[in-house]
Length: 201
Image (cartoon, rainbow, N blue to C red; front, top):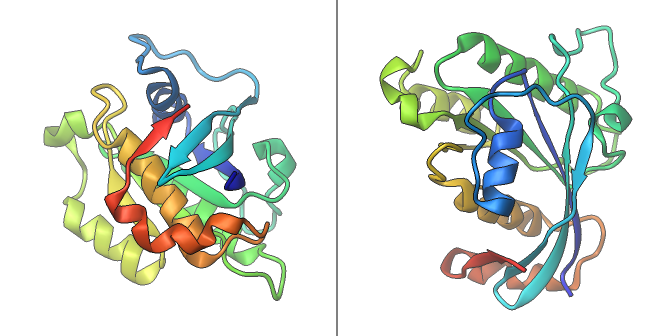
């Protein structure tokens, strides 16, 4: 067993957080958007390079605005007290949802307890299938996120299942590469992750 990894999926309303999770777990895509009304925890098992990881993926209703500078983010309301990684999702056609992610990332960084290692964050631009309506070139956003924010960056399409599995594979890679604070015995496998397959059990 590789251990349990706890992942919080966050973002503004309507960016496709639930759609990404459901595409990864069940291979389906809801044709109509229904706002997430209550927090959900998904607990799939993932096989990666011969090690089994139990994921706990938190998906909850988004606030209509992120916490401001005077508010401390309530991780309990996000579904996880002590996540191993964050997935921050925005809509590549909506600059407002990117600003939402920007605020969330800032709040996560500012509220990290002193002396604790940084938790991996992957910023995900969803709705790549609407590429023609994007608000900013991919390269500009990727440089900002990677160079300035020091976070991972990728784009996906939950609708067409493009890069969704890759997203969760990269997420596992990021957690293991930084050394998970829960002492997973499979951290030694990190060097082989890029040549392995990630599959659900």
